[in-house]
Amino acid sequence: MLFLYNLVVLFASQIVKILALFSPKMKLFVNGRKDVFPTLKNKIAPNDKTIWFHAASLGEFEQGLPVMEQIKKQFSNHKIIVTFFSPSGYEVRKNNSIADVTVYLPLDTKSNAQKFIELVHPELVFFIKYEYWPNYLNELKKQNTKTYLISGIFRENQAFFKWYGGFYRNALQTFDYFFVQNDSSKQLIQSIGFNNVKVSGDTRFDRVVSILERDNLLDFIEQFKDDKTTIVIGSSWPKDENLLVNYINNSSENVKFIIAPHNIKSEQIANLKQQITKTTVLFSEKENKNLTEFQVFIIDTIGILTKIYSYADIAYVGGGFGNPGVHNILEPATFGVPIVVGPNYSHFAEATALVNMNGCISVPDQKQLNEAFDLLLNNEDERYEKGHICSSFVQMNKGATDIILKHILNENLN
Image (tube, rainbow, N blue to C red):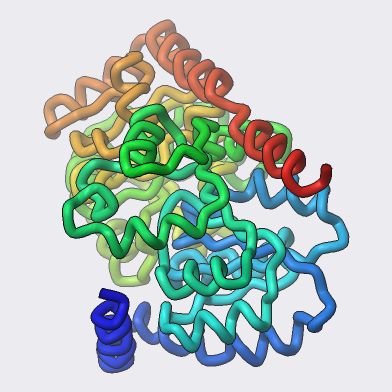
């Protein structure tokens, strides 16, 4: 099975090179990996102590960040190595302040795994949430490197739990410990013979709680808001925007809207702006403008949405009209903001919980989206109550990082 897997990886490595000729994202995927080994050789000395964190993309990086921060404090003599699989994670966080070295993870071939681990020679390795690369895991096992899964989630439809999943189950033997988000994940992993598991919860809650402690001031957002009720639309897709634009165009002049689309390509931003009949300004053209004069603010940049949520009276989180579903709702929730989402949210435990708790409203169509916004705009008590449910939910679920750190420190510093 490993032989077939390696053939597939080699085949895929050639396919992505072809795709890179036509896709900017695939070009980043391919070109970004060309300098990984020279970078590692240049930045990591043979006698350096290192700890390696792997994140599939941006969401997993943010999820693992609380653990990275605490590990860096406790292991101050170690270099922190962060790898990404996806360009959407690496390109946004390649200049992060937590890691000493941030690179793409080379594709999972046997030779790449051997060379990468030889250059990095980590003492501890953390995989965040998922991504199980057999050649890397096999090499870590050969080197007797302590390896952990943090904020892990397992589902019945994964290959580990199928009759044909022996190859994948063997890869899990690398892990010294599994820190999982919920009881169902724990029961699943135990059902295939792994008892080195603990329910720690989701470190994303610790991440979003920490957001409250930083400076979230954005003077241009404050100027735009002008003390008016503001709906912040985060990570929207065209399917969301089709409904949202209709509501915006028929809204009261006393309500302001901030839109931070998921995709900020210039043609899509231009198309979105063209559809809106209200006075609209882009982030990229805000200089020397009186922002109080505009009703809609389109954020055609990345990296500031979290801070923008702190100004929201109501939040709409996009993705819920597509697959796999809604984006991160915890960021507005931590600020105590009531949330509206589309119908596809059940794949995300926190969204399901908040819908069931009535902190978040799921809407399937234009009519119910209009009703949800009207309810929250016209009923301040309803807005406050749902926002309080959201912030309380985040506070009640924090603490995963402490559980993980206590176990890691007991194993490695005692």
